[in-house]
Length: 182
Image 1 (cartoon, one colour):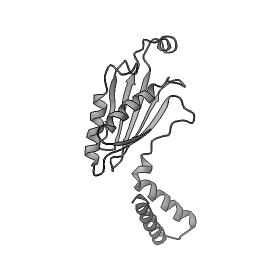
Image 2 (cartoon, rainbow, N blue to C red):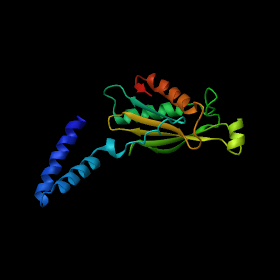
Image 3 (cartoon, one colour):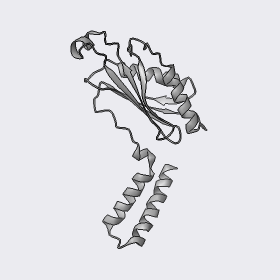
């Protein structure tokens, strides 16, 4: 479906390029590229990949059950996020969490900040006794499919904290009938 939409867009852009003025290869390709990028939300909202060999970043993809609307998908995502324990889980996120940005209904994006307890030796020695903060980024497509990325703001390793968080959330969304991979 997406390929067909992009193909039709390219043909329309090509026709427009020829009717507007002289058709050079550069003008035609620029018109096609601009039209494709502007019309494709999957490309326009693409989430950055985790850095190569990263030890403090995890990506996952969640797909809702067939026939789920974006509105229903967003509701399920919010429910899963809100059900995450404020006191953390499995020695992860002992400092709680807060929804920092929620544009899931409009642009399909959101961000949740998770904090460590700040009580461990690493927080004491490397972060002045302050909790470490991690970000969970969410992007929801029109089809309800979710891309998420959980990463630490500082450091090169998180000792598995982001993976534990994403695994917990992924298990919660799977319990609602979603397909999920990380």
